[in-house]
Length: 445
Image (cartoon, rainbow, N blue to C red; front, side, top):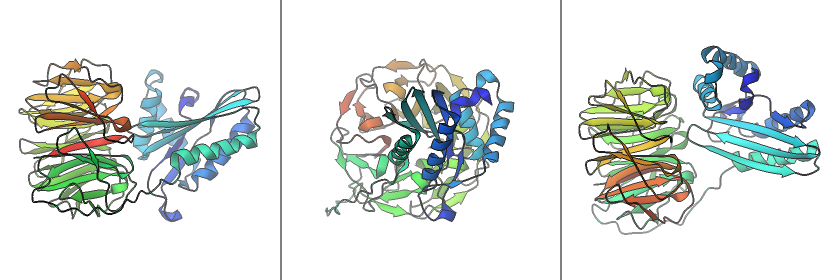
C-alpha cells in the first residue's frame, strides 16, 4: 500500500444533495502529509473533512475501499500503478464518479492545504496557506476548501425571454453547452448569444445534438433538456440519475449514453427508454453511420447497435478511455488519450498514429476532413483517418468538442473558448461572453 500514497484520497459518487437515504456513497481514506505534519494533525483534519463531506454524501465502511485497493495492487504492476491509472481503475470497480485528495504540506509552523477534485473529465483544485496556524485553525481552512469545490452551486434564473419564433428557426444554427446550465447559440459561428434554460438549471451539460427538428442536450445527474428553436428549453425526465455524457441522432431516434453503461433512446427527445448495454463501463461518445450506432467509453469499450435497442460488444484492441467518435467518408473514427482507432464497419478496429503527445477528446467529420481536438489547444486533421497532421489552433486551452456546419468548423473548450475555421488550417478565436467550460457543440441543418 505504500506505493499508492499518491491517492490517499476521498472517493465520491456525485448527485444532488437530497435526503440522507438518497445521498451518494463516499469512501474516505487517510489524508496525506508531507514535511512537518504529525499523524495527530492528519487525523484531526481528516475528521473535519469527513464531517464536511457528510453534508453532501453518505460514508461507507473503510474496509470496502481497502479491499478494492488490494485488488488493484494485484492487477497492476508497480510501474503501471501511476496516479491516473490506479485512480481510474478504482473508480471503475467502485463505479465512483469523483476523487478528492487532501494533501497537507508543513514546514515549521506554516502549512499549505491542497484539495483536489478529479473527475473522469477534468481536475480542479483549491489551495490555501496558513502561516503560524495551529491544527484547529487549519480546520477552518479545510471547511473553506470543501465549500469552494463541492458547496451548493448558485442557481441562475434569468427572466423569461419572449420572442416570436419563425418557422424552421433552428435551421443553420450552432448550439454549444457547458457548465452550470449555460447554453449559447449562433447563426454564423462568430457571434454568440446566451440562451439559458427556462428551468434555470445549474447542472452541467456535456453534449448536444440535433435531429427531428429538435435540439437535445444531456448532462449531470441524468439531466435532459430539449428545444425546438434553440431559445426555449424544456427539462425532460430521463429516469436514471446517472451522468449522461454523449447524445446523437440517427435512424429516426435519439441515443444518449453515460455512466455505468447507461443507454437511453427516444424518438422525440421527450419520452426516454432505458436499454440494456451489457456493460457497466462508463460510456462517453455515440455516433451513427452506415446503418449502425457506435458508442465508446472507458477501458477501450466499443458497443454497436443497428437500431439502438440491442448492443454488441466489440474488441477495440486498446485499454484507453475513448471519449469521442464520429462517422464520415465510409469510416468510423474514435479517439481517447493519444489513441486513434478507425473502422469501416464498426466491428474491426485499427489503431493509427495520432502524431501528438496530447490527450484527445473530440472528433468530427466535415468538408471531406476529420478534425480531432484535445488538451492544450491540440488540433489534428486527416482526410483518410490514417495519416494525421497537427494544426496550430492559436490557443493553449483544453479543447473538448468540435462540429462542422455551414462551411465552418467550430471548436469549444475550457474557459469559454470558441475557435472557428473554414478550412482546418487557420483558426480564429471568438468571444461568447463567458468563462465557463463549454463541453459540447452541434449544428442544425
